Length: 437
Picture 1 (cartoon, helix red, strand yellow):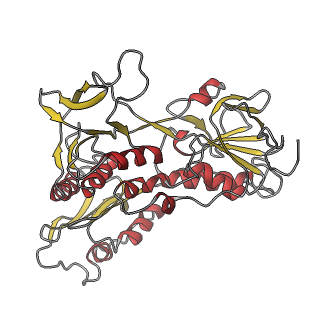
Picture 2: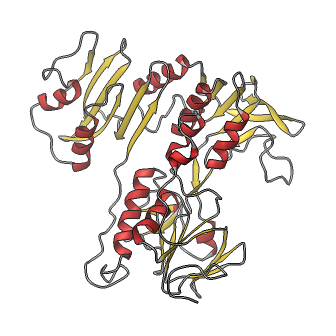
Picture 3: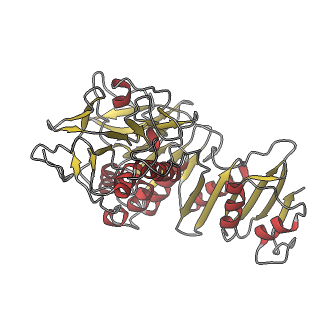
């Protein structure tokens, strides 16, 4: 075995190296930051890519090459990991490769949730029937792109961020899209009712038929392909293409089999350490302080914190000796979504937009322009906000929220941010202030 951090004939890595399992945003970033001595293992045939932009590939705005991440400088092994042996500190792969490690990083991501729909799986079957697609990987995206043509009847199951993005992308490709959402409104985790309504209006303007408070009960299969989606109220939707966008679940199988502590995700501390001191976890598979984020920003922040801890010269809690490692203390997440097309819609949401009875709320709405801005202030601090349309103020507002500092007693700076560049407290004609302190 060599000491150059390059794979040997069997794909093995130096015994004193860092090995990362998972080529998503978190895993690729750790490998990129740590340099040529790090081995990256991923089962997808594609080079690492930015999963956040898959909807843009499906919509035809970007090619797969545009969403590629920078190639890590070290070895990249394209194979599936089947077992982690913590005692021997070895990773066993499906192609027979055995990779030893000094520190192992689990960045295994998450799997799409496949709802328990009647008829979705035949007895003993493990593959989805024809015409049904998850929307999680580049292969999923490319398969959908190949299947959709103008006029294709498509049903998207799930009205969260992923479902909204998929429905918009398919509509841009000319499909006849029906979007079903079990909750009472779209993107209910990120948006308040007014903002959800604007997103619904945007999709409807693109020709998407939206059904909320609508539970899908099953699917009808004929000739090995789904041709019908059955709703709980007995209504049936004819379909040629069905997209499952029902959320994701942390991918923890390797961690469980290796005996690591797992709750919803792989449990980690502030240095991203699992219950095994030689194994770390980051990204969608990790659970920190009881939270599994499942979002890009926390994945990148965890990867950066871990790379700092594992870099040569990190303190005793990291990989080397010297400077103390920087702990990861959690992430404050901001959701951004751009919906191009007729009447493009830009959206940003952060923090808690569900106001409590004692909160102060500032809202501005312009039905004609389709803009909406709302911030929630609790105990003198900005705790959340949602902006649709004009996003000029989102950067300053998000920084105020992240800093968690007390706001000025005077309302005018906050109102100025929402109405910028107009004079503080003024509103554009047609723009209606709603509520307030």
